Length: 581
Image 1 (tube, rainbow, N blue to C red):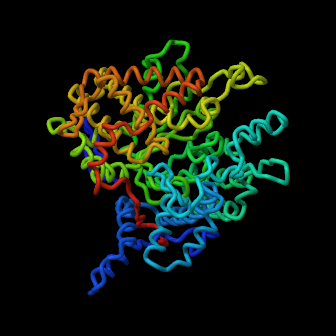
Image 2: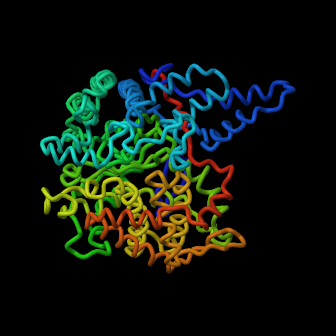
Image 3: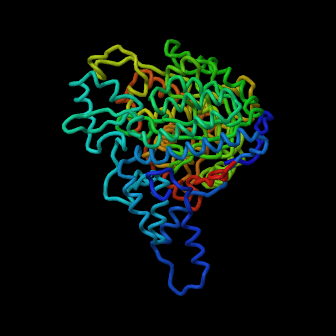
C-alpha cells in the first residue's frame, strides 16, 4: 500500500478451520494450483480452475507490515493481544454480512478440490456468496442477497419494520439503534443487543483488550482498550469513542462497530471491524495544520450561511502503517483511510479522527491507480498523475466527512410523530446515505484542496495534478461496483462531471481528457448540490440522483473494459499476523 513518496510541500512519507472461532490466516489456493501446473501433466487445464484463478487474481497479494523494531517489548506484546482480539471480530462480521455464512463456510471447507478451495477463499474475501464487485451476483448460492444483510430477518420488509414501529413506538430506539440485531420471536419482532447476540466472541475479545491494556505503558492506549472492552459487554460506546479520540500512541488501534454500509435496508446497523496499525508521529504532525483549517473550510463551502455547521475542532490526523485488519475492514476492497467515530455527539464535542493507512495508499497508487490512468487518460495528461495529489485527496476526503450538514429536521412525510425533530442525515437518507456521503467526501475533498491552493498551502501547479488525479481516481473506485457505496458514489461523480463538460470521452481512442476549468466548476456545483440534498434530508432526491447518475454509463463501460489484468484491489498478506511479537 505504500512506498516512499514526497508530498508537494516537502512532507516525506516514510515510508480457524471453522467460522465458529477466529478465522485462520487465508491460504492462497492459487499458489497450490500454480505449483501443480509446474509439474509435468498431460491433461489440459481445467477451465473451472482457470476461471477461479482468474477471479482471485483480480486482487493483488502485497505484503503489508510496519517497522516495530523501535517498540518496547511491552508495546509489542500489547500489539499481539490486540491482533488476537481483532481476529474474533471475523466470525461476528460473517454473521452480520449474512446469517447463512457459518453453515456455507463449513460446507465449503469439506470440499478439498481446487475449485472448492478457491470458491471458499472468494467467499471469505467477499464475506458471503455474492460478488460485491459484480452487483452482488451470486457465485455460491441460488439466493439473492438480503438487503438487511444479517441484521434483520431475511424476509423482513421496510413496510413491516415501519408498521411495527408505528404500532410499538416504545421499540423505536432499540430497533433503529446501531448496536442491535432485529429478530423474529414467534409472531413478534425483537431487538437483541450486540453484547448478547455476539457474546461468544465479544467476551474473549474484551479479555484480550484488557490484557493488552495491562501490558502497555501508554496511558491513553490503556484507557481506550479498557473502555472499549467494557463497551463490548455493555453496548455503550460513547465514552470509549471519546477515549479513542484522545488516543496518542505508536500502537494505534481502531476496533468496534462503526460503519453502516452492510445495512442496505435502512443504514441503521453498525458492523464490527478492526484496523491495527503503527503510527508515524512525525508524519502525522506535519499534516496537523489542516485540521485547524476545518472551520475555515466549512465557511468556504458553496452553501447559504445558515446551513454551515460547527463541530468539534480537535480532529486529529494520524499517518499510520497497517499491520492487520478484521471484520468489515477485511472485505473485498481494502480501506485506505477512515474518519471516525460516526457518533455525532462525539463529533460535536471532539471532532473526528482522520487515519491514513500510508502503506495501503502507496500500494494502491503504484499497483492500481497508475496503470488505470495509463489506460483511461489522454496521453498528454498522464504527466499530471501524482502520488502526492492522490495522498492528499485521500486526506481531504476524510477531512470532508467532518464538514457539511450533520442533522436535518424531519418533515411530516418522513415522520408524522416526529415532525420538526432533528435527526442525523444518515437516518433521514436511510439506504441512500452511504453512497451520497462517500460522493460528497470525494468531491468536497477536491474542492477543499483547490481552496488550499488558493490560500497558498500548495503551489499553483498542484491544481492540474489534483484535478487529473482526482478524476482518474474515480475509475479506481467505480471498479468496486455500483452496488457498493464508494463505487456508486464514484459513478455518480463521473457521470455528473461528464455532463458538465469537466471531461470528454474520445470514442476513437477510448480515453478521457480533463477540461481543467470546467472540471473545477463541476466540482463546486456538485458539492453544493449534494450538501443541499443532505441539509434537506431529501431521500427522494437522493434516490433520483443515484438512479440517474450512479450507473455504469457507456463511456465508463468502454474505459473499464480496457482494464483487464489490472487488479481491482488488494488482498493483503499481513506479515505480523499470528506472530508472537
